[in-house]
Length: 573
Ligand SMILES: *[C@@H]1O[C@H](CO)[C@@H](O)[C@H](O)[C@H]1NC(C)=O
Ligand SMILES: *[C@@H]1O[C@H](CO)[C@@H](O)[C@H](O)[C@H]1NC(C)=O
Ligand SMILES: *[C@@H]1O[C@H](CO)[C@@H](O)[C@H](O)[C@H]1NC(C)=O
Ligand SMILES: *[C@@H]1O[C@H](CO)[C@@H](O)[C@H](O)[C@H]1NC(C)=O
Ligand SMILES: *[C@@H]1O[C@H](CO)[C@@H](O)[C@H](O)[C@H]1NC(C)=O
Image (cartoon, rainbow, N blue to C red; front, side, top):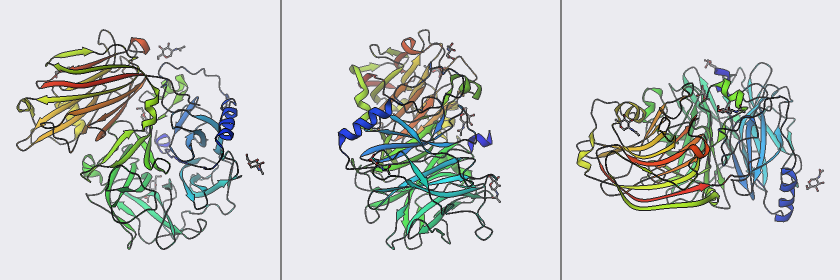
């Protein structure tokens, strides 16, 4: 178990402008006819729960994200041998023109050097001036020691960057007696950023006893790296920091900014994936370039009050990474979504792990949180459309939404709530952990029931709860999987998230859900709260799945707008 969780690496990537469209189209076409996946085991994949518009390899284990330029490239952690994690992890590689349809290429990196013989783990791509993409990644050697290594494209004229070469100077960063770095906790280098002093910087995740650390390295030439005296950030009690991510966000609207940009109207985000909890947490703060440290606005990642630290997603979402998409001037976030089934079931279905729908990410007007929204491109998969306006949902009502493929759909709904004085009191003695509020204190609520069987033996409910305190209303979004499957071997946790910076007395509450067979990705308050669930109904499968809106509480709720679309299948590998 520990070994399996220790992987998550991820990576990322990018590339190439200026090639003729027809050449690229031709190569993609050619590539799509090659089968690049090994067929060295005889398990026939079971596609019952296989998502149709999320990225996943044709089979076996995966995790990890991407990045771009001219064409989108995704490098992902892939086990070519089985749907579980082991020591053969390589960098799978797929390309796309739209972040929706993907074509597989040969692996970019495979374990074949003394320093990475037990795995090419996660890393990042940095595009250097003159459009040169460099991969920094973690290699695992015979002794399970971790080092950071560089790979560059073999042929920069190949628009698909199919082949990569590892530098003879590797490893470029390694634990030594002098630097006291933990040899088995030193991984996942970030995309590099360039300081005003002309030095590149990257951080690498690490741990020193219970202390989680973002070790900072600097380099003038990308080959010789020197560990800085101070880490960029650390937290005394947080355990190992995996897949750190550090990037600027604009204080002026949704526009994304390139990783090296700094200045007025820029804040910074530090994200870490905490190995001990399997969740991604982020802090917003200031990058003090004189001291070369990150100073968060709120307290750090210490374990004692982790439930107060913001997460991208309050369900299954880990080892995420962002990249700057210059063509669309946006920052895109990609996370890995683990299965919620037991390993034996993953092995039976022969695939495991998918990528979340890429999300555009920007700073909320309040400056206190990030907003995430599925990239616009996913909307081109929307097919048949069903709409509804102005419908009152009395307490105790269930309203079926027919006419869309409920197991593969995109649904947007907005609610207007009145008689808020009837809201449930928030007891001051409760721990303000939204997951606890959803699983133990939630009475009723209103929202959507997805992947519901006809007789309601199975359903996943995604809903809002409004609590009142003496001063204000507190909105919580819940994703309750407790009745999602009659197969109780699955993880049936109920997830919860606060929807902050909304006022239900004066504004509508909106919910968008992307449903794809076994994935339920929910966005509350226009992207202020996100929860991703994996569910495996046994009855509510394909055309036996139903969709409903519901009000199970005491509040007066009106649906002001509901739009649901059947989603087409994307072409994925
Ligand atoms: C595929 O998995 C589903 C769900 O577990 C199961 O009902 C079905 O029988 C499986 N199909 C095959 C061919 O094994
Ligand atoms: C590099 O890639 C270009 C474009 O695909 C190709 O024409 C050229 O032959 C390649 N060069 C080598 C040395 O492989
Ligand atoms: C080094 O990392 C390992 C995990 O790989 C951890 O168990 C151990 O406590 C760490 N040692 C120190 C001294 O931090
Ligand atoms: C993935 O999900 C499985 C099943 O819920 C769980 O046992 C495992 O710990 C998870 N791994 C990570 C890294 O989140
Ligand atoms: C409605 O609320 C009741 C009481 O809190 C709960 O037992 C039931 O499961 C809820 N139904 C749905 C569909 O959430």
